Length: 470
Image 1 (tube, helix red, strand yellow):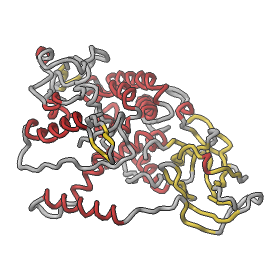
Image 2 (cartoon, rainbow, N blue to C red; image 1 turned 45 degrees about the horizontal axis):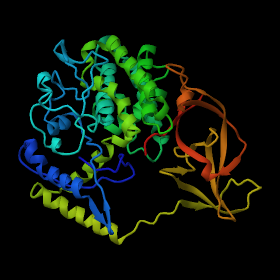
Image 3 (spheres, rainbow, N blue to C red; image 1 turned 180 degrees about the horizontal axis):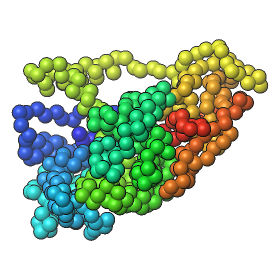
Image 4 (cartoon, rainbow, N blue to C red; image 1 turned 180 degrees about the vertical axis):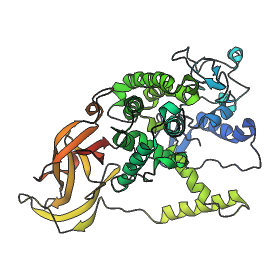
């Protein structure tokens, strides 16, 4: 799915349909893209007239998985020798697998033409996208949903559960880790669409589950249970992705994240075998560079598009005339959105049960509020936040005083330290081992909430991890 953005990818907007195609077989890319390319060329030339003002239109990024990217660029697929679209690197066949052992190579440039690239056999032929003002290298970013979650993280789970023999983690450990994952059901916030499943079901895990395991549940449930070499290798990837997905960290630590990803790939080669350094493992080395152009990786992620694609599929109730069904449902949805405006209050679930600090003049109390893009609720799973001063607290009540100002009543953790020390103290990326929750109540303005935290029970306390996705 392709979307046009102004200057930079906008993640606060829902995807919208610009074209739907149906056929009995895969078309060639010229037929598939011709209408789209013609329309974009017109928009690039004339822009859009809106309320009397001319708005310029440019294609910022084309976000897709590896097979789709190769298809629309008319380039080699991910199993080809010259499949890397970022570097001029030739793959190496090792034990029947296409591998990419080099950690550096000359970069491909947007300015290069197909004729100049004939020698390395990267392109298969003409791509209609060359008719647009779009960089055929820099504006086709790697998507971490496919590369990292569905690619690398699933492969790690395969190593631990299936083979090679020396990296399997054992039946007892699998049961113990699975029990922890299932225990986290009541601790994961509302923003998590899927709750954790047992490790034995890893082959059926969706991309969101794999992301949750990499960023949140994995660092907590694997600690002290799997061999140190496996845990440290996993944490290299987890920390790197935490940085590249964090608005607070990516600008200053992108290069450090790249060094972690290089170390991760190198460790994987030694730990699991160099035959597994394939396309997705290699693509990790390009992720930090993508953030320098687009910001955090969620800005160029397929997650919102895949979610929307799932909604489109549900609109098809029978095999006959699928396009007509989708168009009708989309028209109905648009009509409803125009008639019924969504009016949601920032504060909901009013109550009178406290607790309330005596120095506050309380008018109303609430259990739930929306802050920025996340939900804070007085519950086990949605109450942990970081305040603007860096303190990690648990919200016990939400109150409004007689001036209309909103406050949160909270308790703070007295012991805050790093969850792990390798490859850096985790506190440097906002990940903590929390314990000793004080009984004393404090309060602060709701505006002082900086971000939401995921709070997971571990030995002697909790693992506190910043929530990175919306």
